[in-house]
Image (cartoon, rainbow, N blue to C red):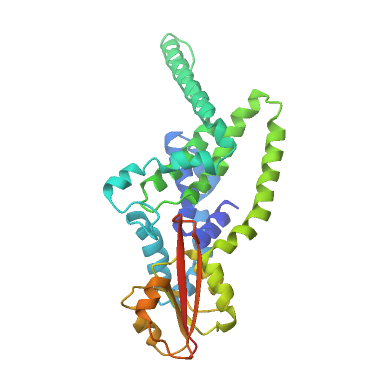
Length: 335
């Protein structure tokens, strides 16, 4: 199950899905857990994992002429690590340094309401670790005089802390930043918090958990249908959907949010082509039906005199990722 999960994680999100391997490896090094190597059967497990990835990855490489690796790994993994993409992050080194604590601040919102207990958890872990070191030193002194002692610490806590730290360190160093990038750490963080909170015998722990789960479920079912109407990509799709054809190609200028793919590829087989203001006229002039999404102010300058059979759709919405309102236009060439 472990290696099957790693294979599916890679197919869903790329190399970041293999972070649990790094967690296990570091746990074996720092916790000196040699039996873990035998339990995890790394040789056979890695072979199984890579075989499953290859079943989909090799055909994907062939059909995309290598673009699966160039775009999927080169752009969305290496590119996001070394540069800011879609405006999510810092464009200067000074701002990059200022944003290093980004996830240590946003976690109090993204992990709410459990984030309220994080300061308490940190203090408890720190005091426990300090007390453990003191006991270890005392036992070491006793062992010199014939006593028996030793300190291994809480191995489960250490394993969870290693996994959490890896995720936060990796995404703290990555230049492109979004609040949800650290979500893979939340199951580990939840287990760590629950392990210590349950010993407090808090009477309302179960009630808090049930109310929180119900609250987030209600939010997930009710809020999205309301806020989706403010998405500019959703508005453009609703206006133009009757004119979209599967064979169409499409591009975008200064607006390349994933929502464009979510909506338009439900009707169009082509991939979105990132364009500039200079390349947009050449793109739409090529043969076959196609369309371009771009800021409305720019559309009026680039396409002032459109042929009678072309279609134009405009909408206003809110770009949540960048926190600003946008005015978009879709210029469609039917043939």
